[in-house]
Length: 356
Image (cartoon, rainbow, N blue to C red; front, side, top):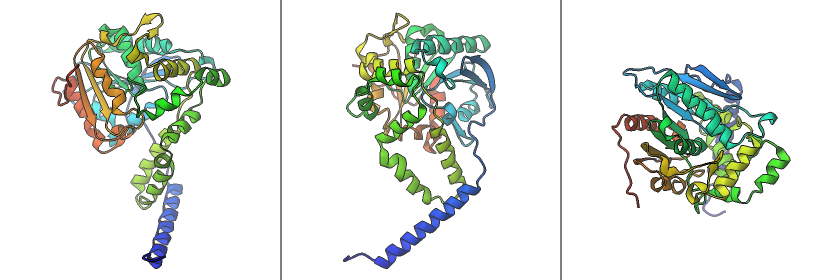
């Protein structure tokens, strides 16, 4: 092997093995990590769903509360993963009263719940309660929760003051949408007829298969570099705990979402009905801030930016230089809540793209 320093290569392998063994020993000795530790109170139980309230921790206190509508397919604990990287703590620290809708874990008895039950049922009742307790809220929809929020805002525009969508898919059939390619090939009716509810573990495997090296082997190899840093190892454990704690999906709602959006692209193409009511994004005349990530592999910018030409009122956007998960938990992501807060208070630094 001409040009290869065999001795140096052997030393590197030995050092790698030693770091890996130290990391395993440190991991084994670490206490259980805790997620979602920001103080909160439960203000509504609606079936499996829970509505939590987080009190503002700084003054001045904003008059308009924020209601966060998270995705059905993951836990919202990623928004409060750890104290120093918590979107919720950052918002309350900026004087916002925050409400978070946690959809819970559907069981077999919930398999017939449809998207109308989630959007015009649970989400609507949460909006009414927040309005009753505090004031008409700003709605912050995250990922799939942003799509649900768009449907709600188009049907009940008078119920909210402003809408923020974050890494939210709108055009589900762009060429670079890896998840869209997978979903368009699925016989979703047969899947749901066989399984009833769709297991969270199955969806986790699907997400990992989109970028198999980066989301499996690469992250574990990178972990070896942090073998001597307990704080970084704890961060890794928190993220792994969040990733693996995925709820099952109510069969009917899952089938409707895949069919209506990934396979038929109804937000863009039209023809979307929810409980017999036509969803038309032009009816959204409240101000909209669309936040997306430049390196998002699940919701690429091309899937999110078409919202600019679909809503009926003011539209602004904020671009985060990072990925789908990094927008919540990376060091750079801690500026995102501050930018959202500035936009909500009328001091936005985001840009308004030209429509056309």
